[in-house]
Structures are given as structure tokens and as C-alpha cells.
Length: 253
Image 1 (cartoon, one colour):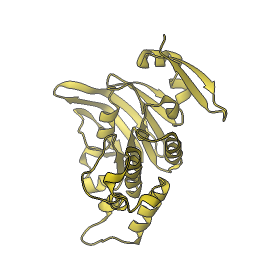
Image 2 (cartoon, one colour):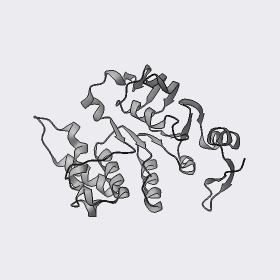
Image 3 (tube, one colour):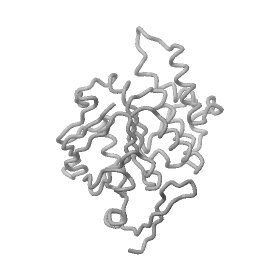
Image 4 (cartoon, rainbow, N blue to C red):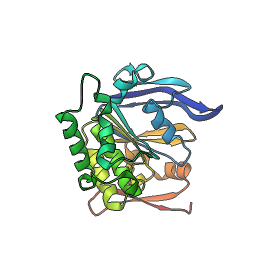
């Protein structure tokens, strides 16, 4: 699924959250969003998910206006893992992941083998198969996050939106999640705080004060001048043992 934002702006109580954002995300691309706290990343992700209407401008998905797309149609194509998602229901892990199949169910189509297969594959992908019978409220924050991601994968989307998905995850599961996201053959937009994780994206966009101030390849965008201006840190670049680029930060400028 290709995505195009055209002069997108969003406000709440007259306070600007996003200002005149235009960018195209190609089909199958892994696009990272980075920026300081309050830069507009979560607002932009909510707009992409169709959960928040922009004040002006619009979003096209495969050349169709997202604002005019029926909710069920949208839910079969776009999955969103929010930063602060939760549930108060007394659900098991498997039941929580089952919710990802709701857009495909109707009075004429009940639960079937394809739904079961999708749920099993999603649980396996996030290493939560052994937890399938556990109750939601007994899980740690990191385990809950992995269940939310499994629910999104069970939805079988063409566009996957992830808002700070590595929050609450230990380092092993951060690495495995990023490897999983990189390998998915769909369009993915991921908001990240960790700039070193962002270097694994095909392209990134940098938000600052609700504006998109830079887009491009991570190695080009995440340069010393931009990091100093937007994030207020000094940075040096070096190669990790596997040859991948790594940034080292210091507070002093």
C-alpha cells in the first residue's frame, strides 16, 4: 500500500499539532518517524490510522481518500499499535489476538480455519505462543506490547503503523521485533525514540514542532548538524561490529 500525505495539518483547541506535512511513502517501504517528545509523531500516526481527522490537507492510501474509507474497509488494510494501548476486559492472550480478525467476520462469515491460522502465526511471530492461555492482567508491560503487535499482525494489514513499539521491551525482544518489522512484506510506518533503531529503516522523516523538517535515507538525514539542531545533542558516527552504522551521543554541544 502506498501512502501520500498532502499538506496535512492538525490542531486541537486552536493549538497546532501538525503543520503542512507532505510526504509519500512507497508500497513495501519501512518508513521511520523520529523527533523529540511533543514533535507530533503520535498525532501523525493517529491521522494515518484514521483515528484523528486533520484540520486541513488529506491522506491518500493507494490513491483513495482515507477520510472517505468505510471503517471496516480501513480495518482490513490498516493496523495500528498505539503507544498506550490497554484493555480492562478479562481476556486471555489468545482472545486478545483474536480481536485482530474482527474486520473479517460477519453474519455471513463466521470464525474459520484461516482466522485460526492467522492468530497462530501472529503469536509465533512475537514469541507469545506459550502465553496463549494467560490472562491479560497477569502480563508484564513488555508482554502486553507483544500481544498488541500480534493482534495487529493477525489483522493481516497492508499498512502497519507502530507508535514506539519497543517501549517496555527488553533488549532481546527489541532486536527481534525490529527484525520482524523489517522482514514484513508490507508498508510499515514506525515512530521511534531510538535513533539507532531508526537507521534500519529504508527512509526516515524528522518531525520538530509539528513540522516535517527532513526526509531521506537515515545515513543522510541523521547528520551531526540536524541532531544538534533538532535534538540538542552532539553525535558521532561509527560502525558496529557487524558493520551497521551506530550513533554515539553526548549532551555537550
